[in-house]
Image 1 (cartoon, rainbow, N blue to C red):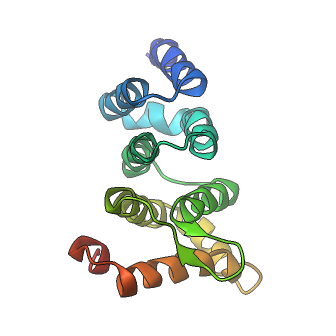
Image 2: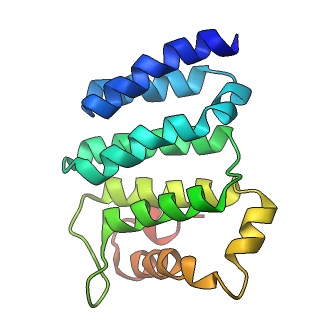
Length: 168
């Protein structure tokens, strides 16, 4: 079963890697919702790679939102077991909705994208293994969470969309 799922997953991920358009990303998200959790966990890094890559490349906010929805689907069905994955994804999410240069401000992006980022942050934190969270919240690494917490606080303070202000 594992190899057959991988044989299906590989071309879907390659399509997203080569062309992150709405159809390819929606196809990946549909696949992620249908595959057994154990397979997703096994290939989590291979799934994250093209999504993360394209989040850095794509400027279309609708496609960015769809890519983030793939991460949400993946994280709700797997556990984050690596500090590196947590750090990379949290930075990518932070960069989608804030300008990190000088004074941190929210980017002028659609509220739907901001909401997807917040939902992904929630999925990321809630599905991260305790040992990884323990590392993140350690004195040496607490600064890794600061940008996420700050941007969520900024969203709650400045956004008009009630779901963004009161997301739990």
